[in-house]
Length: 165
Ligand SMILES: [Zn+2]
Image (cartoon, rainbow, N blue to C red):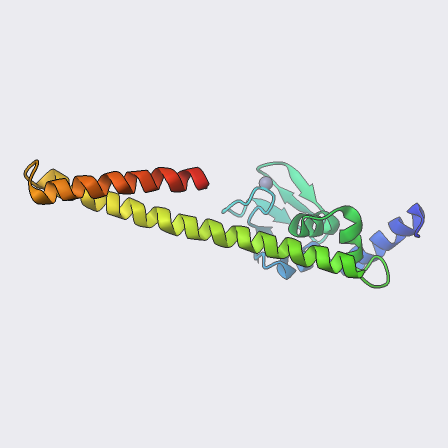
């Protein structure tokens, strides 16, 4: 076991060799002119400032060092992050495994979200199309009825997918 002092020492040693931009790019986060998209709140804008030492989000006032970032992406505790960053001689099997499964989960979540967003976009397109036809058609004509039916179904789907989001 490492003592508190040894851990602090190693933390400093790791920080001396690994920078915040290093860690961020490991996880595919792009840095533009010292800024990146906010990973803390999954933001789309470049609201976070990045220096070698720290990541800082202007929107949530959250600052993170390399260990916090490692914890964030692997959804793990400090010790696991410490191991992953080489705090102990070699990452233990369980640290690697935990990190891998957390990354997989994260990817699956993102994929699922993408799929739902795609479905939603398609449903909204159908809804617009049916509404346009309904507006143009003679009420109670065959096509009008057909589109009313289809529209109800798409509205139902919209509700369903929004609920899932
Ligand atoms: Zn934030």
